[in-house]
Amino acid sequence: MPAPPPIDPAENVTNGHVSRGSPPPAAVAHDGEQQSLSDSEQTLSDSEQTLSDVDQTSSDSDQTSSDSDQLAADEDQAASDRDLAAGGSSSTHDASRDVRERVTLQRQRTADQREQTAQTRLDVASQRDEVADARDLVALARDRAAAARDLAMAQLDAADEGEPDPRAITGTEVALRAAEQRRRAARYRAKAVEHRALAAADRDVAARDREQAAGERKQALEDREALARELAIAATDMLTGARTRAAGLTELDHEVDRCRRTSGLLVVVYVDVVGLKTVNDTQGHAEGDALLKRVVALIRAHLRSYDLIIRLGGDEFLCAMSNTTLFDARERFGQVAAALSDMSEPGAIRTGLAELVPDETAAELIARADGQLDKSHH
Image 1 (cartoon, rainbow, N blue to C red):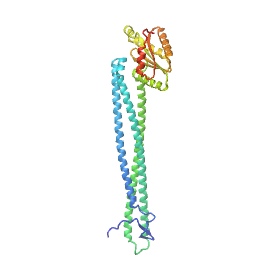
Image 2: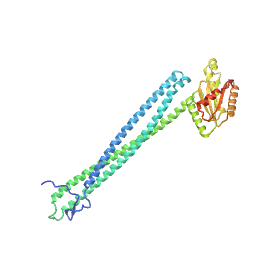
Image 3: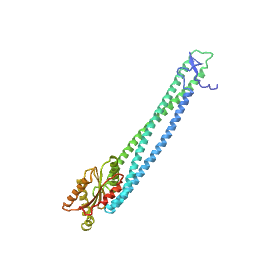
Image 4: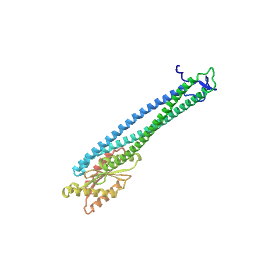
C-alpha cells in the first residue's frame, strides 16, 4: 500500500472520524508557523555571525592596546636609561622630557582604546542576551508545536478506536499518519532542546564578555591613574618643584584666556637668579642647585598657593599672578629679595614686571616682562 499523505491542517477529528472542515482544537503546526521558525533560525544565525565579527574586532583592539603599552614601556625605559647614564642631571632630564611626553600621550590613547573596547564588549554581551532570549522564544514555540502535534495524534488515536464510518479513512492510514506526526513532534522537541542549549551557551558567553569588559574598564582606570601621575611628574621641575617650561607656559596661556573672558588683572614677573654661574664655577653645581631651591622656596612663601611659578630654564623663572596689581606684585618680590639677601648664604634676583593689556598674547606679555628686568639687581 502506498504511504498516505500527511495530515492536512484543515482535517478534523469528530466522533472518531477524520473529516474535512475547520482544524481541531489541538491542530498541528501549520506551514506558516514552520516558516516563522525557519526565519527565526536564520536571524539567529545572522546574529551569531555578527557577534563573531565583533568578537574578532575586540580581540584585535586588545592586541593593539597591548602593543601600544609595550611601545610606551620601551620608550619610557629608553628615556630612563639615558637619565641614568648621564647621572640624573637636569639637562639630560630636559632632553628626555619630549620622549616622556610622547609616552604619556601614547598611554592616554591606550586608555581611551581600552575604554572603547570595554564598551564594545558590554554591547556584545547585551546583544548575546538578546539572542539568548530569541532562542528561548524559538525553543518555546517548538515545544508548543510539538505538544500540539502530540495532542492531535492522541485525538487521531481516539478516533481510530471509534465506530467505523464509510467516509472515514482506514485505521492503518490513521496510525501511519499519527506515527509520522509523532516523529515530527519528537524532532521539534529535539530542536527545542538544541535551541535551549545554544541559548545557555550565549548567556555564558555574554557573562564572560561582561567580566572581560569589567576587566578592561579596571585596566583603563589604572592606565589613566598612572597617566595622571606621569603627567604630574613630567610637569614638575625635579630640582625646584616649579612647573616645567612646557607645562607652565600652557597653563599661562589658559590664564591669559581666562583673564580676557573675565576682564581680570594678570601680572607676570620675569625672575633672573643673579650669580648662578659664578656659584656653579666656584662652589660647585650642588651649591648652585641649593641657591635655586632657596629662591623658589622664598618666592612660593611670598606668593599665593595658586600663583604660577615656572622654570624657564637655567637661572630664569616666570611667575604669573592673577587679580593682582603691578604695585602689589612689586612689593611681594621686594620682600623675596630682602629675605634672600638676609640668609646665611645670601643670594640676589633681578625682576621684570608686566601687566596684561587687551589683545596681548602670552608670548608678548613675557617679552615685555623680560625687557623690564632691572639693570641693577635686588
